[in-house]
Amino acid sequence: MEKTSAADPAAPKRARTRNRRGEGSRLREDIVTAAAALLDETGDEHAITLRSVARKVGIAAPSIYPHFPDQPAIMLAVVQREFTELATLLRSVAQEAGDEPREQLYAVCRSYLAFAKSHPERYRTMFGGLWMPTLGDNSLTEEDLVSLGSTAIQVLVDVLTDCAAAGQCAISDPGLDAITLWLSLHGLAHQRAVIRAFPWSEESIADSIIARITCLKDA
Image 1 (tube, rainbow, N blue to C red):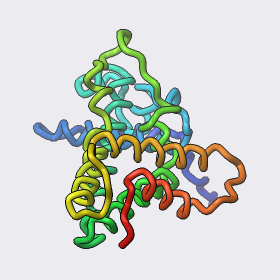
Image 2: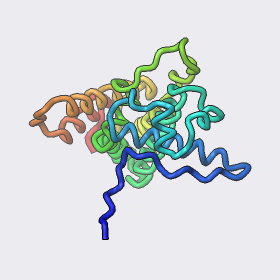
Image 3: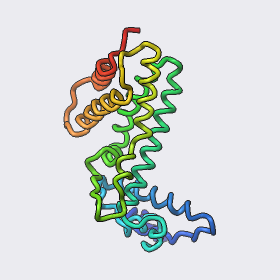
Image 4: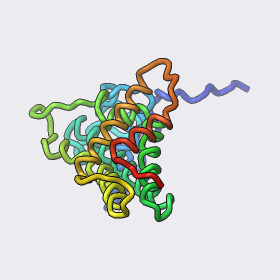
């Protein structure tokens, strides 16, 4: 009996079953999921086209238009979903860290760095490098881009506010200090990703960044 060959991952999927009335949101989510998967597989935003996404989902490319007018709109949806998931993750680890604001702060910052390490392609797309859209030649607006990441940053603002209120750190502007802290952590995440050999202790550097920027007081 002739052996069947392994499925070709690049081969088009079997035609998708048409959504029933009211299930259009499911197709939208499938489109976003397919685009995110392509990004993970290729590490290239340019590999995500209407045709490639449609092929991944198992639909005709024109079926995408009722949900997304162009490729940048799909990429925006991917990035928005990733930021939502990141914010959810950070809030979850803050709660799991207990009632001590200091421990919540460390947990949030360390989880952010762990996310960057475990999802490198998505991280670079979210924070620049892979996806750098321009305005004016697509459906995106300035507000779409300015608001990206605000929910995740707010988690950092909240834990810094609680830390200051508990007298555990000496900051006067949680919003500004949260951005300063994030930029420093982002620099660490970026350098770790681009340097072939990173001989330093990432956890020690991260803890030093957190303590110095927030002026953490001794326990």
